[in-house]
Length: 81
Length: 81
Length: 145
Length: 145
Image (cartoon, rainbow over all chains, first blue to last red; front, side, top):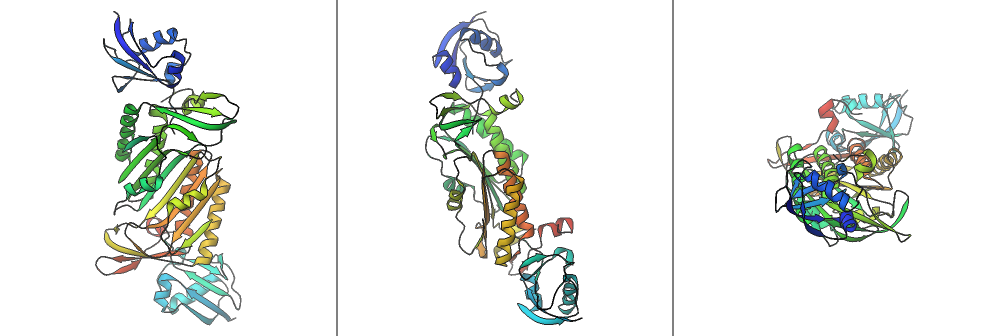
């Protein structure tokens, strides 16, 4: 079933997507589904295991279910310090 | 054979001896001998293994020979920091 | 407390927040911008963060350190924006009764901050190119914890 | 460089001596006077040193650290005289390309400085008594290395 999600991109992901965020309809059950579908859409090659994800400003993992109306934050590999 | 040595006391040793330094004649071959003789003289109970010694401003150990005219520095247990 | 800032980090001011009459030890760490990385000459670094989650995750890291180690106070400040060579990108300070836990907690905090907070850096090279820096563990172990 | 001083230690000024365009990491440690030791309420601490040898031995410790760990710069300053609660008794700073060696060298220097330099401290207690502090390893291991 298709869900309407707001997806926000950061750093390398933002540059790759060419946008800060988009609201799209995706047939996704989990954050992993979102990542995989958008990876194809934006031709990104970054492996999922190097990336992080948050839903509605809470850190999540790649098995977390997504719900209609969620805001999904996609974080490329972090490098603080 | 007796040697004339200048002995300098620091911290707890100085307080125990009641003097900063003294020039004395001791039948001592090594720093260990000096320590043992002065321990008796000043009724100190500090074990040698907790203490340090220097000769003429160079760190020494307890087997270092002492020579006539040397200045021996007797250091009670150190506690920097 | 975890803080993000666009202003120059002032370790002397931050240090004064950690004083405590029961503190016998203070350990601090700073990450400075250096003039090279993996063989490339670096001109400056640009830090981006997602502040709400970087602060939340940083607070979590500091709380974890306070549970793991018997410390008194700990703080971390991370700079964002454009930084020049020699500038301080991140500061961590910990005070505690004894030095073991000050060192260990300080190390724990910087290690976790580097791999968990949503912060990214783009290197601007002397040759005019630029690139996002890969995560520390991605390069060395092929895996983020 | 190893230094002894009767003046207040200023970590911010000392830190600036360690800057280097190749430095990506800076670790520092400070020993602060705390209000108790082994269950006794402490009022202040008095430090005595034999300066010529404390400096010589401190320089040796810093050189050892520079051989053991790939660091750029390292310094240590130890205060002498009468110190109040909260004051800084010793400061160690190390800069290096990466953080591993900054932490390790900083730890090495403070550990060695505490057990090797001819420096003594007398605690003045709230109850009016005072006493020379035994060496760290004497108490715990019965033996100085």
